Image (cartoon, rainbow, N blue to C red):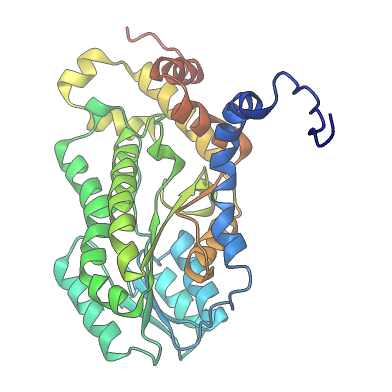
Length: 341
């Protein structure tokens, strides 16, 4: 018939909406991988940050990541305030020797003491460069080994005060400056926030830091302040945060109730296991410092930087996505078996 429309070919089965829904599970799996890339693609043309005239305060610079970061930022051109627990110690003196006079200032900063934190703020305010206060790096931390009942309440309080409350204490003090200059806050966490292998007290504080940062990150968006978390794997050999474990010292510190439950052989086995983990730690602390620098300087920093070996990332993946019973089985298998009596 004249003017009739040409017939359309039959549609294939599985196409159209059906095909779209069939691909949905794959898209959901790829989404976590693709989303972090979007801000970087959008800001690819953004000019890099100019460090000159910007101040950064770092806690825990006596050794380890804080020490390396202070020197790196100084070389890049930042004005660096390096907080040290022992400003007259070897670590602080080495910082001053290597940096020389000028833009790096070493100051006493015990993050458990409110007066130290306030004094640090006053020093920063009195020596603020022209572009203001750009970054706070909450790096100070301590670690130890021991099953839950082996550690005293005083140790739990000390670890919470240094690793958790110390970071909160410095953050609250410097928030007004960070909001004013739309700066960055960087927190040192760990993959141990996801699981524990004999250092539950450390895991506890890092898991708490993660949740504090999650709340803070969302609240600071409206002020243009970026909050980033660094999650290193095992870098025990490149820092002094965890010395080798002495089974004899652990045994001598146990209460009589704990000694009645455990024996020396068990404590020795656990100490040997933990020391073997420490010996496997990476010696290249600059890998973690690279992530810290990116968090401070990137136009589109990540919320989390996991700097770890593939097997460590796999363990975190299992912990995050699989039922708890699976993770418990993996960790139980990893732990050596010793009879208690």
